[in-house]
Image 1 (cartoon, rainbow, N blue to C red):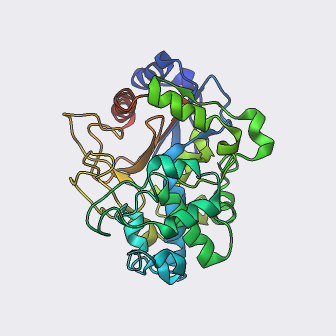
Image 2 (image 1 turned 45 degrees about the horizontal axis):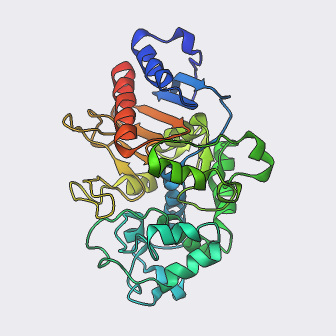
Length: 357
């Protein structure tokens, strides 16, 4: 990532539309856009550029890519049963669930109990893991995609711990964050940075409920891999530029190109996700884009079929478009309704595609 148009005052008229869209919303936010590896838009609204935002589910790909890295190194195989490395997980009909099925949201275990029940114990790693060990599949493994809201991070995180003997937070730091220089990205807010955290601004009943949960210090500091990764738009854009560049950036190789390609392979296309109740294009670490002018598409109504990224509670979004060589990281503190958040993210992505694509 080089070059660097960093002053929003010098952007063109079409890029100004992006900033106006975000500014009119009145939320604390950051946006970073890269085109062909160069920073073409980098702006913070109501905060410093190095202030980290809670990513919610937009942090899931960082955890998933650690599993792909272990596969690349021969520490595990994606089609192995999870129970091969974590025997206690294999009870109650889960003995044949594979690592790949979890990466694809097809394990049949989107919850240990229920989303509410999982959320109640999410700050306690041991209790969350034990609940997954005792769980029965809700659907037959491999049958259909069913979004793993919180279980995704605990399943993959405990797998990483079992294979490496090291906690997932430390593996993420040593294998991904430090090599890439992502100094403002953390799994669980470090206590030393609590005074700098940005509270979530919630809207609507559901948003207020989630806001009460995610503004608690005990939650923000907890290791919940599917929900409590925090980062800046600059750091997250750099992560996606690494992937767009085939796993190497600024002379540092983190993943083999084949590993990135494997993670981007589509695993569902047009199937209705049984939890989200929407047709989601999943890969084996990411949500995938694709044109659809008729309805909101957070990665853009005219996004490419190969666009890959992840949305986080409709308040954070990052994606990379290989054909356009374009990366977007857009983070906010606003927890909106699904409809409002999806519409806004679609508008921002469309504006970015129009300005730089």
